Image 1 (cartoon, chains in turn green, orange):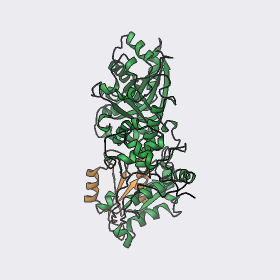
Image 2: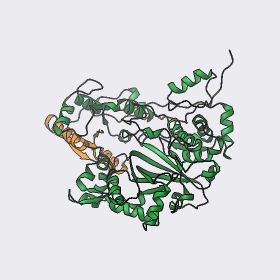
Image 3: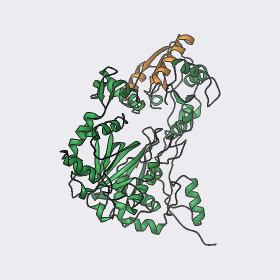
Image 4: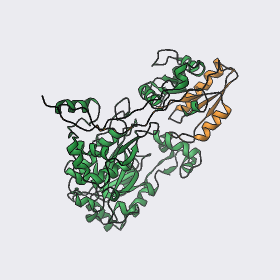
Length: 433
Length: 96
């Protein structure tokens, strides 16, 4: 659409499963009649002959020959609507029309405003109570968010965040954490076809002030604060960014069970190492929230046992695109420390040196191919060096700065998990109290 | 029957949509330079290459040029300026 604005007649080609999404994006950009043509899904893994057949076949959306759509899209004269585009105001009301509780619950479900678990209806009284959890004014703008980079940003205020916090069942004392999550602008409801989820890690004094659980079951449904803050982050993401509706604003083909709620504090008191927020440049006395994006894979291990290096290497090899976030019980951290790994950074450096694959396998990863290869071809390091490697040459996949470790858990087992998750942001919670 | 419960709308605020016009179209593509923009999705290069072959075979009067943005998912202003300055039309594709 930017090319059209620059005066270049254009046709965008999509696969047919993205027809609704492509048209919705065109409408939101004021160009509802942007010319588009569609080929069957998938394009990935298809041979040149298969793709030639797509080109010589029919557009599966219009039913007309694909190349006819292309040629007409580039040459068909404009009509009045093509010339003026479509301008319109959109808004959302502050309050909904009064109705019964049952009807309102049904309305929230039908509008895809919930995660299909029961919500707390955001009455004026409940939202007002939530707003007492911060000094910030209800009409202050907190940030803006969108489900993916080609969609438009939606904006939100403190009050709109409070509405979603109420729906999630959160308490007013949790609200500064939830506001800081909203202020990251990082959506926990990415529309990615790869079925992304996000997790949040809380550090600093607020963990204990609001009763977060860094001990037994910290990642699970065993603490009111952990669960409802994580749920609020997901609900506010879908509602404040303009939706997370399958086939419209959500395209994750499998979905992700971690997208309901995943928020936990670091067990700073039981860890032998510096906490995450200090690694990110904050003072130990400052409360922060860190957002991680991805969660396409989860590995697990126990120990460290004698074979920990081999085990860890196998897990590290699982994710070529997103770097590892290693979450470990304090038992594991202390046993590493006893083995001479006295800082997180030492283990991070070891992981960076041992997260390896043969170049052919690394570059065969779909998202390395799609997102990393263009950077490599443009000469951006360290990707360019990896691209120069012979197919059987071993390449390192991740830089130390991209690998993270968080200590959490209740000491009932020497367990660790490895999430494929990219650190997005760490923000101070203090401005949101 | 009571007046019912009043609750807040949970949605954020969408931006105003400002209409944008399409570019003027040529009557045909003969003698025109058509940029084939490979959007860098996996296998899109193969697709765009087949599109280039199709034009060479069926509409040889159209000059096709392949071009790629510097990154996928990123608006490459430099590439866009080049297409606008040197091209008469463009096809962008294709993903997933």
